[in-house]
Length: 187
Image (cartoon, rainbow, N blue to C red; front, side, top):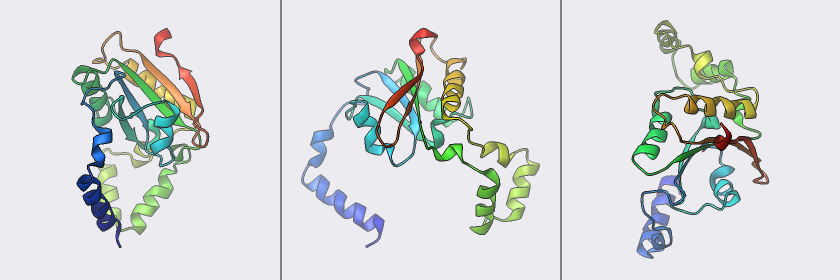
């Protein structure tokens, strides 16, 4: 059975049995916090459990490496929506050890694109349009520095509410241990 059919069958039973009732909550985060974290599969259940978070407690934004690389991109827009429209009042950036973004090799990824059918012409057009794939696909060398960099970008954003604390943490993907990297209350 393919994954989509499997998902839809599970969902049919889930809805039919009203299993969703255990997860009902409002759209505003109970703990008034927005979290930016990595999309790593090890964090899907571990991060909320390690932080004692339940459905409805926080807004969670996931992307590769918990990095905000564009100050006016979709991730930062989501942070601002959470702060201005969804009653969040503080931000937490959570990276993790053993992150794939630390080892991201832009040249390797571009070669993979070519092997999977993206033409050299497309890549050349992007380069000639000012899109530097080696820069755009760059990760970070050190997870703590990656977290600090994203915290700094958020904290210095011209549209961030002046008193909104922006914290930074790193989680261990095996144990769930959290390390505070930036205490947003002391900035």
